[in-house]
Amino acid sequence: MTTMTFSSTSPALRRTTGLTKANGRLMLRNRLNLAYGFVLPLLPLAFLLVGDRGDVGSAGMALVSVIVMAALFPVYYNVLSMTVTRRDELVLKRIRTGETRDLELLTSLALPGVAVAMIVGLGAIPLALALGAPVPVNPVMFVLTVLVSALVFAVLAFWTAAWTKNAEAAQITSMPVILLAVVGQVAISFPEEVRRWIDLTPGAAITDLVRSSWLGLDGPSTDPSLSFGETWAAAGQPLLVLAAWAALAAWLAARSMRWEPRS
Image (cartoon, rainbow, N blue to C red):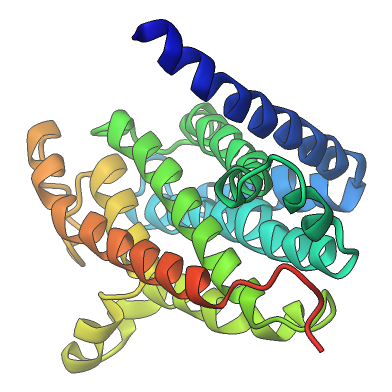
């Protein structure tokens, strides 16, 4: 039984791995992609040099910006542009005529960007500490936040690709999702009635997860109060928000995904 299961899943794994490596090589050959993927998301750590060492405000702003940008640039925009470009070049159509399944194909498009986001997130930990950020309350949850955020924005990229005419149009069609990502960082400046709706955006969920996992902050509070165990309890709602966005985007993408150029 075990041998049969292994032999039936091994070809799918080999196909996915092969396509992922090919997409990763193409991504790494582009110097602009390297800069956007590895350098740009880490630039917000410079905020740590502005405030006092260990300052919660500057640390929160810097760390949230790092994770949001890691989800947006190496994952969301990269997956979006790669999917649209491959579609317009009929690469996706040719691959689908073989044994490769749709899920394997989409996974291979997403994994290189997700891997870069994870490298950025893990690299941000020692860099932030060296620049004066406080020690994270729950580093495990912080790493989990990076992974979940990357996966959610990869799915959002496939949804956006479904209604993006070409690679040039991606600069416009990506704006709604980018807005959903960044609005959470400025939610505190809005009235309470508006903030309730902003809390349902993926950006707000990422903000809450980063602030609680690293700084032990509960909601908009600027006073660290959460213990290691309490950060897990506080993560429930933002994780549900991210899961809901991923499910919605996956459903919409499955219904409207195009494998050939849009007319």
